[in-house]
Image (cartoon, rainbow, N blue to C red; front, side):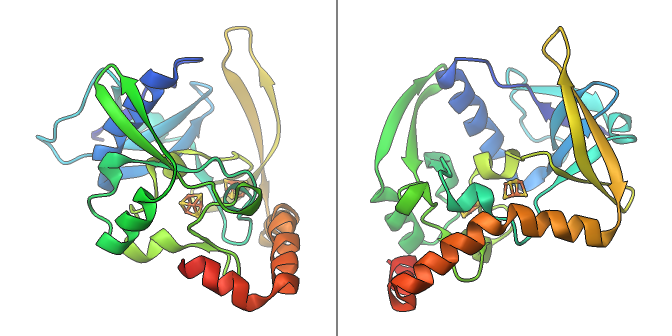
Length: 234
Ligand code: SF4
Ligand code: SF4
């Protein structure tokens, strides 16, 4: 088995450092493999597997053997939930993530409120994307229930969106799991308990979690489908 690079855990209360770590991770986005929960380490692992010779900033990454993933659950974000995009999304994108996006998308992002964060690796401009009604992300297509940035490739989404999971849904060895509980250990690590479920149970949970988006969409339809479409294209 080969080696993987795992993003070090965020530093509590140190936003400048965390933005710096995200910027470094964003450079390696195309080698992002997913977020896993290791029951052995009792830790979430944001896993990257860059091709040999790629520069990896070891201040923000740590190297591990791939075998650490052998019993790990892969975090999933099933289509139809959309909770993280539709309401108080808190979504943002970093300057170095814009270069691979089409010019018109870059322009749209650059017109959003932004902030220059002074990080240990230099200033990083952070653009807010959560400026839609009720904190909805501007790239969330309310009608279709999807991220419009997906049109530009699977790694076009902001790194923060690729790395952030509710941890409710997981897969392992082709099987489906739902989180049934967790407990915080004395050292701060979190022990999560997953239970294997069938497809119907999984789908019911997706529908339950997605009810927020369904209500939101109903409200928008009432407000006028045309308005929704205009806003999506603005
Ligand atoms: S709540 Fe979970 S499943 Fe829903 S959009 Fe967020 S990460 Fe995905
Ligand atoms: S960029 Fe995409 S994935 Fe991220 S919050 Fe916006 S719609 Fe959701």
